[in-house]
Figure 1 (cartoon, rainbow, N blue to C red):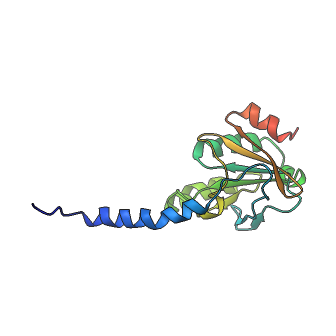
Figure 2: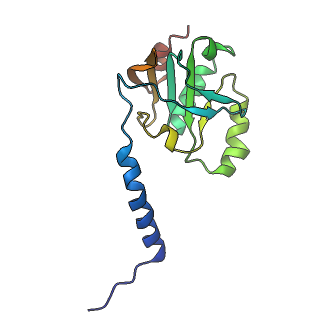
Length: 164
């Protein structure tokens, strides 16, 4: 019986997937009652941005549609609104090619009037809940998760944020 030759790239992919499997098994999704995530990221200007103990709301976008929605809603408010209302916005840009990030995404983000914590690697935000095309809105109370909601349209996001 002839032996089957495997393509080197297929072997490498299988090895990488096998090595990454235990990492995903340890990550538990963030739920009500859990401690607020201890995120320490940089914003689009290179300044440190994290979830402080007094943070009330953590917004999270895991894809472009969610980021566009958050940018649309948050862009309507004056600079400093998020900081005054104790809202932290985090975007997962780990899947974005670095050239696209440097040449297009960062210049566009720098023009926005609010800070965005940039997750350049998936690890720090791996346990944050997400839905495709929706912004995750995590209500925090005294350092604990009070509620997790999702907004897939601007009216719902505005309602959850209560920024008016």
